[in-house]
Length: 201
Image (cartoon, rainbow, N blue to C red; front, side, top):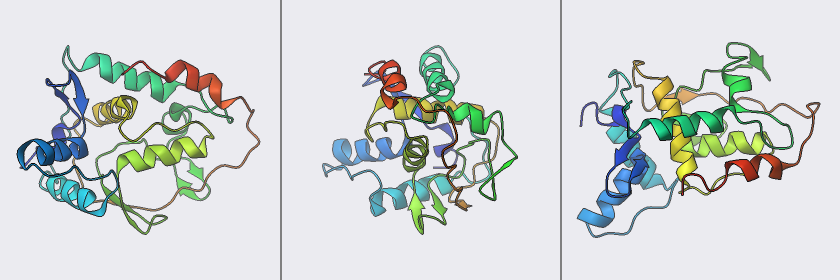
């Protein structure tokens, strides 16, 4: 299993779009073991994903960058750069424009997903990248995606593409980032949500 997790998300021919490591584990469970898939954030699913990913510790992140993958990478980039929510923020405003600065006493990272699943101090538990993305959207006061939404995997794919060449470090430990209070200009959540729905279905 060495370097397997470093290649995820990866394109799945059977559904003609990418899947992440947790989805691959669940597909293996349902298709090859004939057992029910585990809910996202279930302790057993996180444990399996962490175990598989830990086999790639120190290996460079190496998601594909080919003709099949690029439309989804670009789709993830669009979501990353889209201003949305009542605070009218994009992921890029924190993780590109202000990385290295501090927010609520914690440094702002570049959003490289090389440590997931990871132990986050504010959670007091292991959690997935999917959970962290949902928390970010909530902090932006934007509508969240369903856990199985293709948009989530597209965003994960783009983040992994940005991190290519960096060493995998699962399971990592991270401290919490405090949420910024208001003061930013408000806009209706539905403005950004209308633009980002439906593309990857």
